[in-house]
Image (tube, rainbow over all chains, first blue to last red; front, side, top):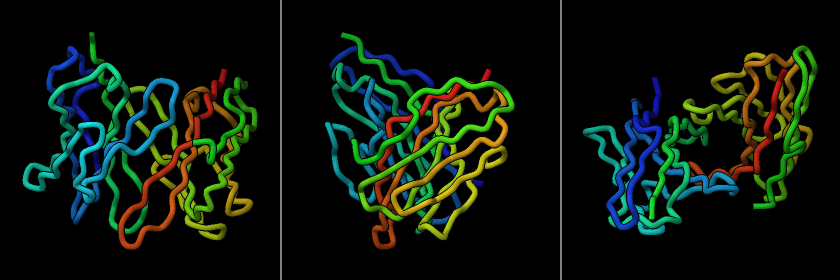
Length: 109
Length: 115
C-alpha cells in the first residue's frame, strides 16, 4: 500500500539550529516526492519536489530509495520557517497526492 | 493564491443536513481535487476530477458526492452530514506536466462543523 509517514507531530528548535523533518514512504515503483508547507494564515503551497533537486528557502531534501526516505533539511532554522510541513507522494502519472500526517515546525527565538 | 476560491469559508450545520461546498478556479487547470484535513491525519483525498467528464473516488469518498459543473467549478456535497465529517476541507487544482506530477494549488479551505 502507498503510504507516507511523518513520525513527528511537532518539532521545536531554536533559531540558528539545524532542522530535519523526517518523511518515510511506502511505494512499489518510482515515486515522486514533494514537500508542501502551510504558513500561518496562508494556503498550503509547494515547497520543493525531488525531481527538481533545488534548494528553496534554504531547505533541501534528498530522495533515498534504499531507506525509502525524503527528509527535509535546513542547516540554520529561521523564525519565519515556523509552519506546518507535509510530505507527499505521487503515484506516477496520476497526479494524485498521498500526504503524510504533517509536522509542525516551531522555531523559537 | 486568489486563483482558487472556496465558498463558504466557515459553516456550522446540524446532523442530517445536506451541505454543498463550492470551489472555483481561474487558473485554467483541468484537474481538481477535494481533500479533508484532520489533526494528526494530514490531508486525505475525497474525490478528484481530471476533466469535466472524468470524476474519481479518492481514499475516503463514503458520505460525499461531487459535481464538476465546468472546467472551473468543482463542488463537494455531504448528502446527510454527520459529526465525524467535521473538518477543514481543501480544494486544489493542477495542470498536466508531461509525465510528471504537476504542482497542486490549494484554496483557502472551508471549516465545516457538524453538530
